[in-house]
Image (cartoon, rainbow, N blue to C red; front, side):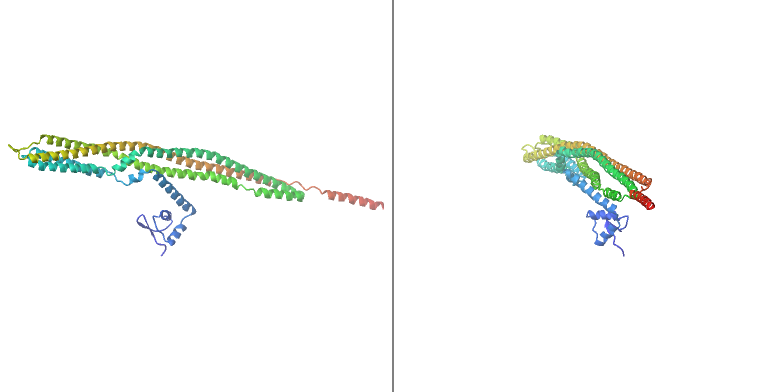
Length: 431
């Protein structure tokens, strides 16, 4: 039957070489549940490099989340959809309230008695209530938007601090590069010197062996053993530590990406204030028309029935309602005027923040490129070191191969033996 497929991004996905990496990454993020069998099978399809890349991607995503969370208003901005629909509906409601009140006012001007005026003024008041309610609901993200605007300077400082931090990492990379070159040169010199000394001892060993110098042979072998056991791990660890800091610089870049995304979210949220401000102007104009008409109507209404004006009570009641209507329109106009002003300020703050976000984005690209270049420079230094060590080894091998051990010297004891032999012979002859 094989291992069962998993649900990835809403689709049944078989576990194979082409899908294993995405599945495993989703599993590590908690987006996919795997049975023990599915987990083991997925891991069996991944190379050590694939596993390292998944871990690196996870670290990068965690760093980005951390950076995003540095922009406190980003989550609030994310919680709101665009306000286009809201602005349209509330504007329609506001204008409908104004139009309704104006129609009532027009009918009121032609009313034949105060009782009718009182009834129509109630309609005007209702229209004003609709307008006020619509104005209050205009931009239901208004509170969070103006708060983000108030925090804009602090948000920009955070964004700028990450730009400056990335500049600092490039300075540190320059320092690390100089250290890496120095450490590599030290290691290369040490290894090459060691290689040369071993080759020289090999030549001496061959000569000592050819000469039958047992004591010399033993001494040379001991020296070679010490050199062959030379430990360069400390220098290698220093190189790894220096190059390993690149991961820290990459993490700084990932975190900056999160800050950029958070800043962009807030910037876009604030920039919505500009079109909302334009719509606010339309709403304010409508309210001004309504308020003006209400004022004129209130000033010109009089009792209609003569000679004793039995409708005076209705007219008076109507004027009271006119006053309330005018107050409601005035309140609505004040709220709308404040919102319009603040919406434009939000839009301006969003545009300014966009400049800071753009600067950070450019620095992210520059620092990432610088990190890649530094990585390549390390590779070149490593390659040069490897070539130098290989060249030193090749020269040492050739020197050893071209060495011709000196012919063995005659033993002094054998010479003495010849003399003793001669003397004996001579002595024998005398007898």
